[in-house]
Image 1 (cartoon, helix red, strand yellow):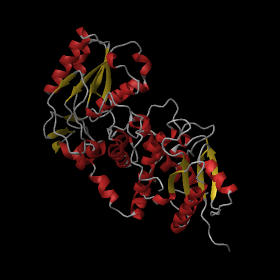
Image 2: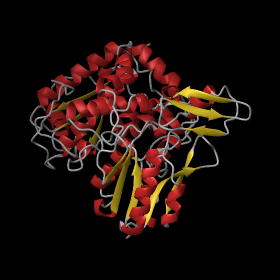
Image 3: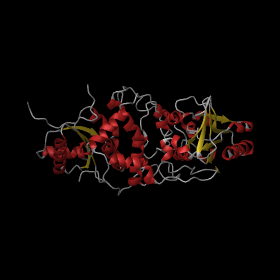
Image 4: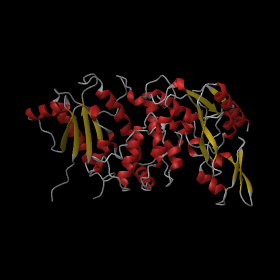
Length: 322
Length: 139
């Protein structure tokens, strides 16, 4: 609760005398497990702000996907670790102006996975969710009240998060949190790599065959903000628009490569996926390669050039035919 | 029935590898007739999507060849290309595509011999793998 209280006080101050015109955060939505984005201009509305396990969406995306409303305005925004990396990425890619953004980092204890919450509640309707930042989260329904372990309902991206705290911020609320190590984060990638080529292919096929090409992953992705995406260009069409497996697979591979060195691993794609595809595995693999080969991580260093816009002359080129 | 022959798409830079292929031709150097050539202005022009689409349309292998580091006509096109390919290759291997199907090389305009060697090598590599099945769109 204290994080929430402090957040409200900070935002109220910022709107009253901190020189910001607009603040972006979350409020309780119509569903108890999903917070709604909240845009406030009046300091009184700061009381509506919440910050808990339900604040899954990335508030940075408005800077690219709905940016006209920010023209000439100084904007404040509350950020989890991953959101702050998106914001840093935007500043580096000239999508946002550092001087016109007030970044408020908040102690993030992870965000929930709706599928996991639904099964934790045994399929019963959830009417209320209480999260005080403790080890357990309380779910309430018509005739039940249960406490569930936080870790059991967290989104998989949060379970392997290496940067839960906002890196670049003007204000930080709460206590910095312990993160997992890089090796822990890559456990699934290493396990997958250890399989045989045929098995890796079968698993990939099994996973991506489910894709219905709804593009929810692309639409929520903070790093996907091209005015016209390559899959939407149809004169000439770059790839087929059907759910045929190879078309879907190529869409996902190219999307992965387009966000290479830019993916902040917030897991928004996986949470948005209606078919429950494990989208993060390929993102993690690419991020691992970017770190190993180019020594860069997305949204970490505000001064570094984005990995795929940069090069070094004497780079490792083991993959070139000798 | 004739024996299966690999079909390989060679995407070649106009300023070096394409001229290298030309040199191999005018010097009458023998190499397997397995490649179909597409000429591009620079290896930096090659989008990863081109490579994936070639595999999807049924090519058994793809070769992208550009200028040696330091020799790019546009100063840094091949360096940018190298970063793109450095990620594509491990990603394809990760999802279970045979790594030898997609290969990269640097061949200058004066390396006709080398061009023939590279084509011979990739043809043999792909022949060992057999016809491409994964990622091929069934029509």
